[in-house]
Image 1 (tube, rainbow, N blue to C red):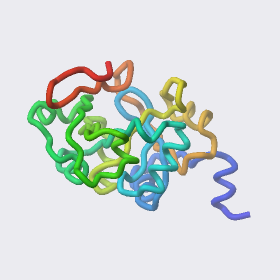
Image 2 (image 1 turned 120 degrees about the vertical axis):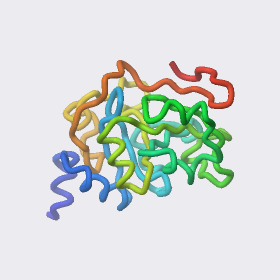
Image 3 (image 1 turned 45 degrees about the vertical axis):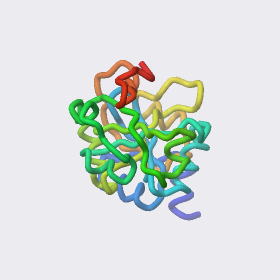
Length: 192
């Protein structure tokens, strides 16, 4: 039996090394990692096979779209057509904004919308992971549809079993629930 199959049978590899987890993402993997309020699921937003795998794992309809999380605003350039000042002024921080998506951005990432949800995080591990992955990663709460998000690496490992390629161990931020989402054009609250 190969080493890879052995790990899959036991569950995802728990990693403290953000560089190792970033290599897995860049190779097309789907990982778990800590963010502001819970653990997130992530992959390379440019790798459509990985995005589709993440959506299946989460049992999330592709029409809903996903969040792209970056370490700095310039990491969002391949995904967002514009980053209004209203959004940039809140970053880095736990603020997710809907902004106009680039015209050719894959529907797997933006869903059925003309906008895309983006955030420049202040969570150190998540920011470092995004930076090491080319500037951005997908970020969606680590849960299947209808479940509450996992708040620890152990809880995530128990719930998702061997479906993830790795989990970056660490602590989540202090937010009691996932980041609010606002429309960057209007300021309207979309998700509390």
